[in-house]
Length: 494
Image (tube, rainbow, N blue to C red):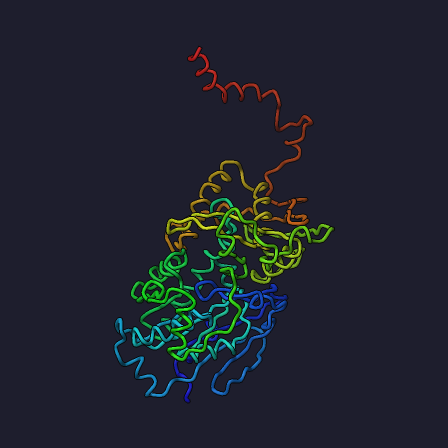
């Protein structure tokens, strides 16, 4: 079969697939809403099979070609014959007619079933899209075959790791954005970068619609669709889980068999997981009862703090204008820096959070998160700010950080309010430059050193010894004036 000509519309920069310069963090999985992480085996490979290399994949002969770092990856499927295509692209579907749909695709059961469902119900051509945000793509060739078998006309894979960390994670870190006191927004930050890439792909292939596999009870449907609205309001959005009659895994398997779609043979995980370069989340099964303690074997990125090394490890984080740039004196790219800290933090049991949160759709949910590298970075950033921000600035920043986190959690990344707040965060962080040394020990982080050329801390002023700048006798007048309202109220009460 002739290969699809539409692949030529993609630039090499858009389809670049970069292997990390360091060891990828030891798990492979699938992005939630692009497919759930289904088992430890899916995550458990200890080294990325794509480490340090790119691959050019063509289904014309099924071959996989290894290329140099930072080369192009193109995943192309052979087009269907005219007879096969006519049924999906020229005829009206059961629910209407769309020309071409870009589907957020993982190769799991849900998205494999969505492909024929879209063709059947909307009479459309389906372009599958997979984003690499650090969750690990175990087998691109296998993903390609799954997409082809499901009925897709094209598969597009984009490496978004550097963009994800640089343009989404680091701004949230600089802002100090934490949702409901604990959640470091791992999934919330990943959705807009994926959705943005889907909009770009839709434009490049001439699609008139996008589709996702998010359920109607979660936050992710909102995050994807608000991004679609913000970047291309003319795109149609299809959310099969809000439309179809499939209610669970068994229904999906039955639908797949009916439409001759090979059912992915994987061990069904008892947990619903979402992984990327920032975190790994766990929901479901015994976690649905907030009284239950998580099982020890559930965790995949971090060792149990009780089993962590008996000797502490010191790590030095270099920061420029609120953005991390180095680890232990070595300058690294954003994604490589985070990947390296994930490995360090993971072996010391850093970054485990167990919380009950308020979902955007109104219900409460319980989740357990592993964010080793992110937890280290948050500790370093906040500690450096203790030197570089004055009291009023810090208080205003902390108050805005709550709203910033709320906007990100709610999927409003491209909201003008968040963008304006980000400009404020960038401005006040200009002097947040320096380094912080942290001690990691059995799940805990202790700050041991912090320094900055813009430090507002003055030892000569803070010392208990007498100095020329601060006269302790001045404190008496200050206290009388500062306490005047209290004295007046006391006089009135008496």
